[in-house]
Image 1 (cartoon, rainbow, N blue to C red):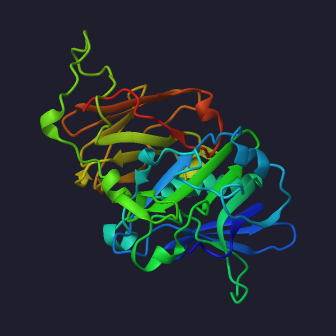
Image 2 (tube, helix red, strand yellow; image 1 turned 45 degrees about the horizontal axis):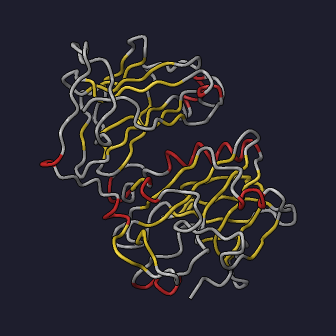
Length: 361
C-alpha cells in the first residue's frame, strides 16, 4: 500500500545538522507560514545492511517537466499521487541512472569512522542554508499526532522486502531538489537492500542495489589497457577499461571564506577518495599532490569497501585558478590523476567532481 501522506514541501533551509540523531541528519526549514519545520534525512539504514545508495545530481536538468512545475509553486506542502502528479519515481521518472548510484559506507559504529555520505551532504546542504536557496523536499509528511511538523521517508519508497514491504508504491520516492541561483542540484537516496527493479505496484523484482553495485568483476575476462606511446615514466594518465577500484572522486578546492580560517574549522581543502572494491584499502604511505609538485603523505588512512574517505590536504594547496591532483601509492606508482578548471573552482564551498578522468591502475 502506498505511503499515505506523500508529497513535496517547498521551503527555505535554515539549518543542517548531520549528527542530530543517530541514523538521520536533520534539515530545519521554513515555508513562510511555519518555521522550525523538520526534515529527517537518512544517513544509514535500519536494516542489518546499514548501507545507503545515493545519487548526487550536480546539474539537475532544469528542462525536466517536474522541475519546470516545481519552479512555479509557492512555499508549502503539496500532496502528490500517481504518474500524472509531481511525484518522483527513481525507476520510471527518467531523471537518474540507477546503475550510477554510489554504494555508501556502513554506519560509523560499524566502520569506526565518519559516515561516508556526510562528506557529500554537508557542503551541498550548508551552501543551501548559506544562500537561502529554495529547497523541495519529497517524502511523507509527519502525522498530525507528531510533536514536530515536517517530513520524513526522504528516500526511495519501493523495492522493499520484509517489514517495509507495505510501504511500496510507484511515483512516491523521496528526494531533495535545491534551486541555487545559477543551477539546480538533486540528492536522492535508497537502501542497499532495496531492489533496482520493481513491478507496477512497486514490489521488489530481482537483484538488490547491493548486488548491482557491488563492483564484482571477472578477472578472467578483463585485460588491462596498454600504455600509450611515450608513457615511459608512468606519469601520463589514460582512460581505464573499467572503473578504478581506488580513485579521486571529488575535491573541495575552494572552501567558504579564507583558506586558513576554513581549515581551522575543519572545512578546508579536501580530497575525496573512492574505493569501489570489495575489500578495504589502506592508504598508508600514499601521496596526494598538486600540479606544482607539493605533496602530502597519508598516514593511518583507510577506505572501507564501496566507500569514500574525505582527506584534508593542508600541505597541498589547491589553486582556485585551475589545476591538477594526483594520487600515488606507497611505491610511487600513479593511481589516479584528475584536473579541474578555473570555472569549476570559482564557487566557494562547492565540490568539484571527477567522472573517472584519466588514470592508471
